Length: 413
Ligand code: GDD
Ligand code: MN
Image (cartoon, rainbow, N blue to C red):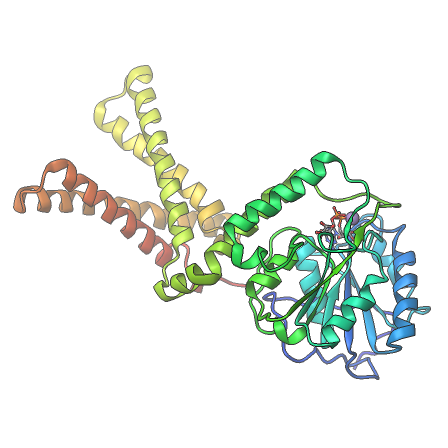
């Protein structure tokens, strides 16, 4: 058996982002579970990490000595934040450090940290000292007194932002209002749904399938957790002294994406979709790709006929094939991205392409059969017949491609 150094890095949990009811057993720990596990996500926080560990340790040593752990989850920062953090372990024995190399992103970092956590109460705080540490004790008390979730909020008594520009305030509030319209049952429950500073009971998110994008992990917890009682504590979001914020325009896009995903998978709509058991989002993407193919087809057809002067049949076949290639590529990198990602390599992709091609061609034949049946046998108007046939064939193409070309059973992890 290998002996694990007490100062070694935590191993990074893999698989789905789900928190188990019982903490992971860690062979090298003598003591058992702690009450409270606080995750500190970091990316390029080299100059902040010592200060935050020192402040939090002092605070928690006074109130719950030995009954907590600090878990730094660093996304392999180029400034080697994880290394600085690791060097602090001898001085702060409650500190644990995870260096994540495969995945990236604030929200998933927090979940990975919680997955490695031993506490009955889980929490998160920024690593740049913009979240005042003292508030932690109030949050902790709120959970100990029965709240499932305790959120540090800028929008209740005692809360605020120190000196944000008008633009930043506007964007922050705008994002919140948009979220409220989209997901009232999630964002409406707290005054500051954008907060990245909160604590919750492990039990309230046990076994939930978390699937966060971007920065707003609290939305995910509210949307998918099992949370009744919520407490809020005011705090002032202070200025950064060291390092810089990692927020870019990309995070606003991620935020919209996250809202949409939660909208489609939680609440009434989510339950309805579960019953329906049809991959609606995938199908819509497939439809959009098909629509793009129509324009590719027409454009290539035009070029071949008018500019190159090719015959009608050849132009038709060639332009259709180009459209099929177009559709295949988009479907491979977008519609079925999650599946093709697991079937890497040119050969596997080419095989998918061949199957896609054959399925699309059978679709064309099927379409001709349906149009004939509707028009010649049932006397349906020819355009309506064509529309019905197209609708049917799109469904056929989608379904058969899902089952044969991008087959989940082929996935080799
Ligand atoms: N592991 C990891 N991976 N950590 C990250 C990443 C990442 O990709 N991106 C950012 N962090 C860490 C930062 O190092 C910092 O400790 C914390 O997450 C917050 O990142 P900032 O870039 O400083 O965010 P902010 O100050 O603009 O926003 C904060 O305040 C908001 C209040 O509205 C965040 O806490 C938000 O979550 C919070 O909503
Ligand atoms: Mn910050």
